[in-house]
Length: 308
Image 1: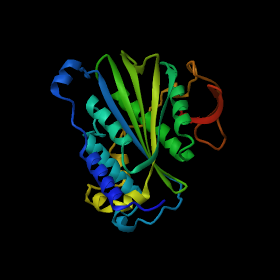
Image 2 (image 1 turned 60 degrees about the vertical axis):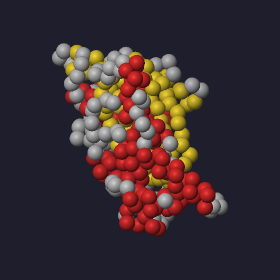
Image 3 (image 1 turned 90 degrees about the vertical axis):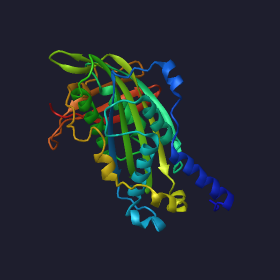
Image 4 (image 1 turned 120 degrees about the vertical axis):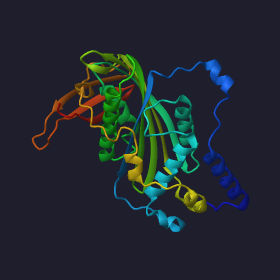
């Protein structure tokens, strides 16, 4: 790739400055017409870090960060700050929710952004299709250990939703952030799901029978662009990857152990699977192996089911 000329560098710097400044909220008169009522909605956030121990390029002028992971985590912090999004809060703010996704999608330091989704059916008895959709979307982009972390983080967000008491019926807006290194490529990802839940006396919150959409944004950090704009990055409030992981609202929660995670009773019209749990003599928990047909594609994948 040929180096940028001075005019291109100026435009790049301007693009970063405009992005970092964030977006103005819609005028009050527009919001008044929408009559937004989000009192029955909540937010649950989980973040996952992974690294396959592959090498990364020299930090050059960014050496004071200590690692490329810290550079990426700092950019993610700026993404949150510029959107006014608080990953530690369970309060749902539709404007900040939308802004964060837009800021992530337009992040100047990300290259080759993938934006797609999967829609599946879940029920009170089965959350297995949610796991299979996540596996289909990110399984080829992360290591198996990171995929395990993503599924476990989803279960933590599920536990947060169960324990966060609200109205009789509520929408739980779930966000999963991913920061992972694979073959020297530092990848940032964003997964989102909204699940309708209902409170049942004696049982607590349970998901309703419904279709859910798992959306995915994934991109690779542009090392050269970061180095070109080191002066700007060095001025931002820093954050290491562990601060990013620990700061998510679902981090303190245990994994949700509902048997619905491991049940394939309801799989929806888009996914047809046959699965069985086969305990390994050397494992502390059973591993579910499944072969599933998604459209015209045959998939083989694992899910991890904790003993209740």
